[in-house]
Length: 373
Image (cartoon, rainbow, N blue to C red; front, side):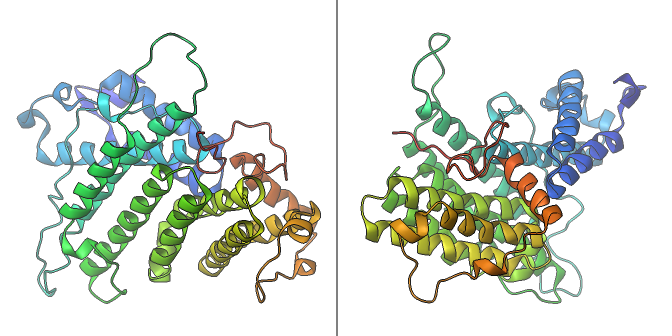
């Protein structure tokens, strides 16, 4: 540990390497690698107080650039931590309430660059807005888990802010967001405009993700939130969807699974179940069309329908609307491909809720939802 801290100077390159390796683990679905390097990072945070910039030293000692880089690194890793906690179900080890780190200010990204119109250069404001939303997502996850607890185990607990407060914070952020982040513009030759488009995609999707987890735990409300998400992401240029990588894909897949769970477990009528299945298929189709380069990711939707069919859920309980049929015979039964596919599902705990696949790993929040009753 001390090798990264010599002569009063933190080796940021080593810490950044931990972050890159953790991100690589996430993007490739290697969650052992993700947790290994997240653990190293959190150990460094604890040893060197990266969560509290008042202990870093004075500005004259560090320099403005060093402070900026540390802030960017801390909040980038915070967002990775919250996302993986949302998807994989682990605790959040860098909570906002114990963080004393300012936001980066984009020192090396001026608001106007020669040769550009200047309207879309302040993309770093969008980066910080996305971080604001991840702070809300953190509290949403904690509040969601608190509502799921059936009994107290170790005496009185701290109860997080309620949904009304979360909704108000979300509305405030939406109102404060700069105009270039209110909608996603088409990809262009203006690099600043493209950066803003990427940040706007993050902002848009995270807002909808928070709304899904704070909606009323009824089939109609959850379907409505998922439909709003789908309608919004359909308007996003595909380049931005692909640029977001596995993170956005995992969250979309988790949303589709929630809707499927509603169809098979929570629907009170045939019509309600049909609506949920039609929405799930629409989400699945969007994922498939947006991830043509990732066959494993697109294939999970087809296999979900195949398993539903094998369990008699689609044929005996619900029907797909006309034109929504999937050619189940076209699904490959290649053993190697199937094992790769199962690994993706089992590691995430995707199918344990519906009984399609069993898993020995602890399920996540978004990929294995249990709405509080």
